Image (tube, rainbow over all chains, first blue to last red; front, top):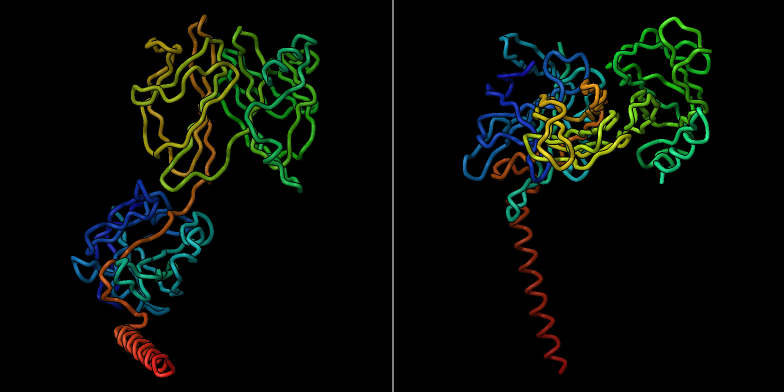
Length: 148
Length: 276
């Protein structure tokens, strides 16, 4: 089941979710170019999955569009709720259990994109120090939420 | 070489010692060998069978076009026998003794027709290496009584000159493709076209089976999943507004440091010139 909308009241987010894959050339997560939209990894589990990580990533910001939907993702703390709406209109609520920050060169992506293990929602954006020359953040912020 | 070996053994007697088609058994076998995953593929038209492994009936009334398994089998040698349903093993229509199952491998054993239309058994080692994110693996095996063929996707050849009992493979973009099989070097379609749904992170193995002469060529498909990889990264910010690093004061400080260095350099220069 494909998510179409994500709501995170604690940080005032309501965003449209697009199904995305990977960039053909770089094999990187194809985050939607519009910073107001966020992307669900369509090759991984959907909302109905009984195991594995449903991954949604979005921009923290962009040079030409300003703040993104996940600008305040790093403010989430355990207990905050996240609600995903499926394409059939069904809402599923998750509770934040962890927020982590990794250097992009060290993040264990295999774990966050796992298709097995307990069902969970994984939200990813950028963060940490910004390299103004490369227009690139050093880190990824990862928020993990469990179904309520 | 492998093919020549098979032929020689076949000429030597009714029972063939099996050599695996596909590369890398030796390298794929870890020092501590785990069980192997073994699937069985039935590619002999019009002939349901019972399958015996080491004298024990393992599959009953196994229909042409079916794929069974995977079974978890420890490394070792196995005797395989195929009988007509319900008939005793002594009246097997096809046997393979001492079939070598290596440790920790993923194998498909196909009962099929050779190029001349005789029933035979060919074991294949399945390539279960991870595929890149967004990709799927397509493996095509020629297990039909037919001459060399080309496999086309969307009308253009992807594998050319494939002969029985060999395979061709490649990692392609995940998604649906329209595939057909033509006689090698021609546009004469012998199988298909059929839509193949190549799911991301899986290997789809397609067996061409049957006989060109009997006009019953068709395909059997087997899927192996769990071969996915994570994307290589999640680039999700180019603005710098959320910079939590060291912030502007750091750049200010770095600027100051630079100034100090310049000042120090100047002083050293002064000192040097003073010593002169």
